Length: 425
Image (cartoon, rainbow, N blue to C red; front, side, top):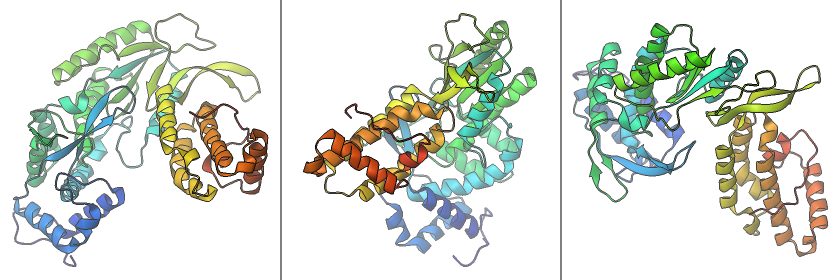
């Protein structure tokens, strides 16, 4: 792999590109695909494996294998969706294409598109949405029905062809779109539309498609309208209810034009009701990127209490995290030390608090209290002399006073640590 440039091949793909793609895949880890080859097994013959990818891609003979389909819960709703898991080698090949295509299309993307883009995050989208909620009274909460399963291939290919000057990028994008899914029962499912979530190139293709299907269209047809989009999660801001009604209908027609449709049960017009905006309306809250925006009590810089339209962790996200805490079964790990438990849960809890604690952090208190209750049960189960609750509570207070940074959720809370007496389920 020391020679970095290609030669004598139909397509100019450097070995350096393949190496950089491998490094990104390695950093992201991930499960094995249909060949059941793990990253560790791939690394055992790394040089030959990377050369094989480069040789086949640069000669035009690379053919993607089927994508392993895995059912996972929907992130902000009920039910499940299929996640596509390519093989390690295929993830590297897709990353080569994604990096080359991203350099071409990233400059054209709208500033209000936040999903899967460099130096942008879901929290950036939530911050922009929060600021705009102060200025307008109405919002359209859009839900594109089965977006990743319904994207028309011909429009995706057309968008890629408009921006890529490399014929191999278009060639491999076309092949990946048509790669079959291997279902959990082993059967192969042929597809004629959609781009399965989970592959390195899929988010970029989705962004490129929605750039033309939504972002560029709304900028052209409704230039004064502001929005935030994180992948297919979209919020549109409106001044009046009449404007929101007209625009929602226009967006619905636009989705039909590009081969999609809005989910009528989940797409809604929301009134931002708070202490100043007091009209009655059927919908006065919406959820975006895991945060529910609704009227909430707050305290201003002048110390006065008021009711604002503010984001906080959604009920669904809170329940999902609580289920995860329950699956840890911390109170049964009596063979572990407190330091062991901290090492186990801190990276996860720290991620939760940094993301969902960015706004209205007290909404996380029930989750932190649940973790606390399990740790109390662990103490009482491990040490017989601490079975009485008051003794266990005194022990816990002493531990957290002596080692305040032992647990991530202890360091997170600025208020004095309080033990909830409710039983962890």
